[in-house]
Image (cartoon, rainbow, N blue to C red; front, top):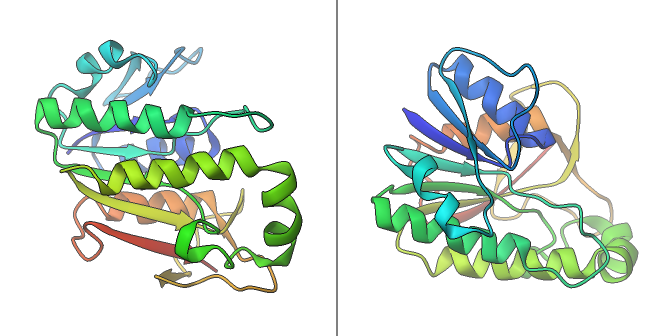
Length: 209
């Protein structure tokens, strides 16, 4: 497949790029800069900014699917990078008739509010990360309102552990008391599976060990 990966320089994004190439996909990685030394067969870097709709058209042309691990580093103030960036991605997809969209968000959102454990529920989310999680809620709402074939993937706390292939998946995989975890490598593998697996089309699925 021709796959556009958004957020390709982040932790999950790097895993998405390498694993997608390993599966034989032709990958376009969207970023505001091209990493030095990145030259691999079937990998094309596209300069673009999700907040600039005009910069997305070239990257979207000819794609079969889009996988987003979009993130940002603005943790402590109001932000709409995730929601507005995702809105622009979906608009470009609809314009270019790209049907499949797989997006990483997080446990602890909306109907999974209590599934990140007490440290996140009582401290981290309300006091350290409120704006970030509020924008993730808006991001999910934008996705659900779109006409594409979307899947929202909500992982637990992300780690840099190896790919294991052993994790739980479903609508409720977290716990109200303790935080559940999963490696970025396992998240990337699951997200890429969704490009062809139709079990979770227009559905939200949690994944965690």
